[in-house]
Length: 356
Image 1 (tube, rainbow, N blue to C red):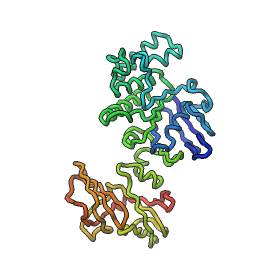
Image 2: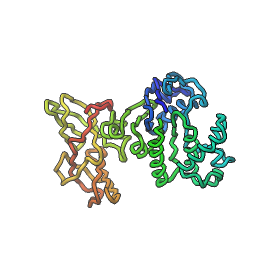
Image 3: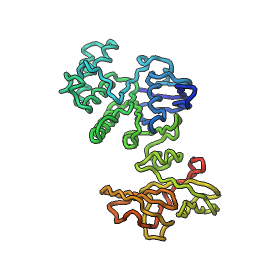
Image 4: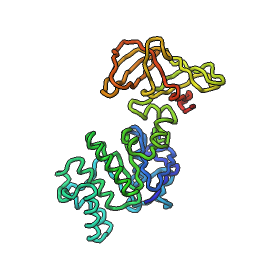
């Protein structure tokens, strides 16, 4: 296996449009499972295709280990890519699909047979090896696509939203299998997704991209608990962080107050006056009696989810979501007091960058 390094990687498809990637610098450690996360059009798949050699970067460098592969063809990079749409040869059996890449590389037939059988056992495909892709379920086809990558023993694995075509239960099963494979193989893996659940449960680190730029790189806990900016705060989490626009006042030694619509929130930030963004996760919002807490809000929608309830509120014209345990007796139109966990507040400047 090997580390993977991107240095100031830029990709422009059309001079009249914004670059798909803008000076992306990133290092994936040897044996790491790194997730590229972001909304559609953020550049994550473009980055993966540049690593694989399917796209030529406009500027920048790509290294696998110490080897510069920026301008090498895909076949010379020793990476394996698993696609969203499986990309299996429809006229070949599962066995032949698994063996194809090894045959092209001239691997001896006994070795091919050994590797195919070993990979099939690992992925539970032994009884399916003689079936065509059309005779397999979506989950089975994705396992064959995974097996075709694994059987090659590449230096790095690249996954382009490989589970997005599967139903929720099967996605959960294959997530566990992928993590098990990563532990067993000790492989370097780069995984592209827009699904936060996949990112948070699978990634050792997450790289959040937006508009072709890296917005934050860190562990799932880092990204969730200390988002670098307003975009990351709102994007990570389901639902994302509440971000209220307000004004700081009285920011003296020991802190001050941020006024956000009908809420006046004490904060620890010192010496900051003017417009400010205050963030708080829905699970750190509590409700209480009217005229208690930091101000009042009006209930708009109540979503009972069984173990918890999402309460959508409006506080002085700004939207706020509370995640409360169990079921609650609230209805649209109710006026309630709002409590915020002061230890869990996030403050961002007018440009959206983190202050505290």
